Amino acid sequence: MGSPPHHHPPARWEKLGVRTLASTRIFDLRAARYRHPARALEREFVVIDAPEWCNVLALTPADELVLVRQFRFGIDDFSLEIPGGMIEPKEDPVTAGVRELREETGFAGVRARLLGSVRPNPAIQSNRCHFVLVEEAVRSAAQEWDADEEIEVTTAPVGEVLAAARAGHISHALVLNALFLFEPVWAERSRGRVI
Image (tube, rainbow, N blue to C red):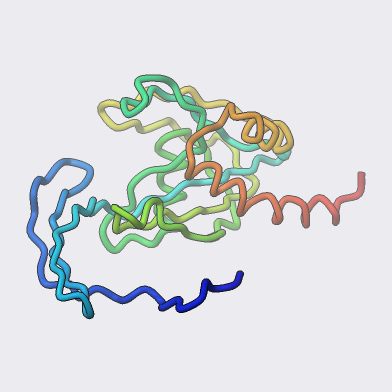
């Protein structure tokens, strides 16, 4: 990508302070005051300070992914997703992913590892979402839902899940991120398999 003529790189604003506007069960809303280094301009920006999140790609011995379907209040509708949730303070993302998978679905597996991490929306959010891959996942425990959770658990072949994502049947952006990171791992694994 070329730069337009007379292009200057963006400046790093100086953070002057932060105050809390509201605290909720799932995030804090903060006002962050910044000053531009060259323009002598001060502004306040709203930031959602949320915990770290994890999403889990749980691959079964039959090469299916574990999916969850639940009602989502933000869209006032159902959403097809992979298991996931909030990471406790100082909790390792892989440990959190294994815990969330067990709690939401009753599934557990082996070789849990971090596939990658993303910033859900750096314009207004401070947190990250971590994607954990768990292999050989089988149902091995009772589900332990939070008070407001009601989750339908299903499994589907990897190819069907990827096709559903491409067709718009899976629309959760972070789930699409997870599938984006998982697809090359799956392709590499498939190349090594005798068919």
